[in-house]
Image (spheres, rainbow, N blue to C red):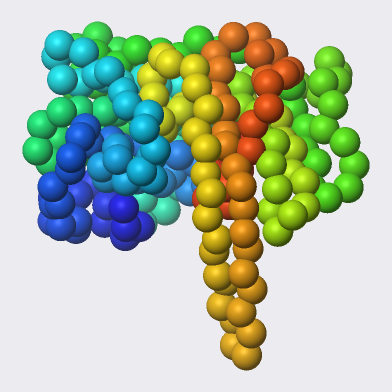
Length: 236
């Protein structure tokens, strides 16, 4: 999975095709006001965990959600999608099949009947608890602190021995379409700067669920990579 400027609209020219031991995946996001996309192998995204995905008989599974009242720059020419941006995740079972999502996928009309992505299903909006606890403070189930999305998330774990807890919501789940599950992580990451290195160790799992305020309980832990993914996915 490589971030390149031409990944959105000319993926076959921009990215070298690699063999996957399972399904291919592609997903779109809004990151700092920019429309972005990730393409790759499902096994790479899952980082060696035992979780699998059931794609179905047609070899394609796709879900989308329109984040209301936001705008995003969708290409290198500065063109914008305004009045809401649609994000999606798509899994498929054929070689190099993950090239369907492009800049046009940011417009919800792309998923209407008769259009190329009309087979995708719309995610159902739910309400989730929203809070964060990094070293200090609390992440409680406060009914007054909520967000809306298609998936609720909960994180509970440690970074360099320090407790981390977050609750929030996501417009898509890049790991599945309908299943509810937790993904464990255990690793260490070194961040290099001039003259110094910082090693971050983590012991983590992120849980996704898809019913109202379902992220109220259950122990989870999360990796640095998954924390970054959570920040990308949270509905602002």
